[in-house]
Amino acid sequence: GQQLNQSPQSMFIQEGEDVSMNCTSSSIFNTWLWYKQDPGEGPVLLIALYKAGELTSNGRLTAQFGITRKDSFLNISASIPSDVGIYFCAALDSNYQLIWGAGTKLIIKP
Amino acid sequence: NAGVTQTPKFQVLKTGQSMTLQCAQDMNHNSMYWYRQDPGMGLRLIYYSASEGTTDKGEVPNGYNVSRLNKREFSLRLESAAPSQTSVYFCASRSTGRIAREQFFGPGTRLTVL
Image (cartoon, rainbow over all chains, first blue to last red; front, side, top):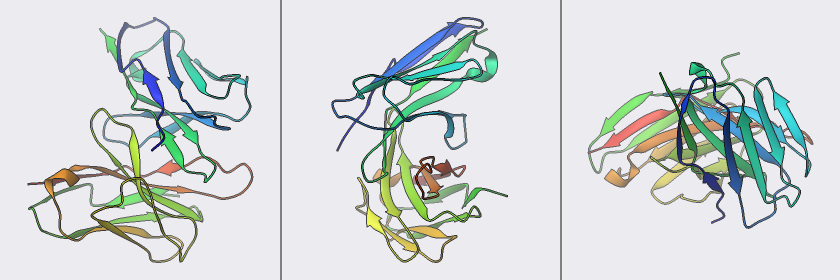
């Protein structure tokens, strides 16, 4: 089936550092979504992107929908301990089904 | 509103046993989904129901059956569990409409098949 290539797989960062992760696809999608999953919980939507080139912020999070509609990135500025978790990109296909990346695990070094 | 609820939270089965995972949503959403999540992988769609009375296969339907009991409830059944079905199972729901693209997820059911 279709796949999204998400990188990096994991990140070890210091508190206060900025974080960047991205997602690419060989197919075009018209909606890109970024979810966060805390341990023992289901994914929660962080940012939704509906238009190519769109740059959207949610607090310290900023995400962009690539102009080719085949990629997206998520930035987190000034990371804090509660940012730890797994971040997933997802894209909506023409049947309104979500295609998922494999996730980026964020670990903050004390 | 409780959102999406799932029961049980944890389950251990022996190979060959059967069980049903329950999911309910109180958001009056039309679409409901069952996913499995395995380590190092994204979520994979097992089955979905676009509306009450309809169900369709997703990416990995083999070994599972579903029932859309009513608008609120969507259950997932393992008839003869296998170790390969050890996973975390998530139920999700989505409204329909022009801007309703977000899926809301339940807390998950952690299933181990021995």
